[in-house]
View (cartoon, rainbow, N blue to C red):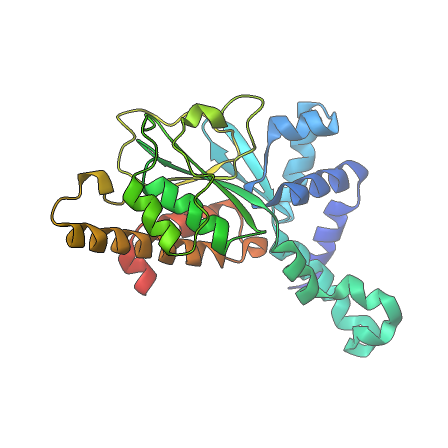
Length: 284
């Protein structure tokens, strides 16, 4: 990166409100914050905030994406990393470890590793919340333990709960099924609901209903998968279909779990999640 670009980045950060703004966006992670939420948190008038956001955007330090009528801003961590790396190159003749504890400020690899371990809340949706979304919740809570908190819900949750054969399969594969139950997506809306970072729908349509509003910063994806409740055939054939469904979800979520979240912005994350809807894309 050219020295002039580096200087522009540091100049954009050289103001108190913009430093507070960047810290707020870094704390929010790749899901970002809406302009209205930033203004509320910082107590900054909308016109003043717009000026500061524009300055940071021109320096490549933040990027907006549109969510309905709102703009959601996210920090561009790769750009910030470039600024720090530029300084690190000159430290102690290119050997920052010789500079005492100051080298920790330039520990790019270590900082990236720490930043790649935020806890994201992921909500899986399907109509009855009895099979596909239940599998998604169980799989991600195991393979993404400590990095993700997975939930599931449906537009018309099954009154009889998850399919017994789905629970039996998950239990046989070593999953804890004690907390799995069918529930309405209304449990994840409203002021008392957990903040949701990702919503992944696992069917083509949710009983003809539009998804509720889970917040302006949520990143959504649709991974249409067959409904086990409609599987026909012998017990052996049904077991095979369930195994194939589990394997398809496990492959997708394994890739999702390994994404470099610290270096991907909202648009890149959305694109990667959309790619995972295509089974052929995963093989490329």
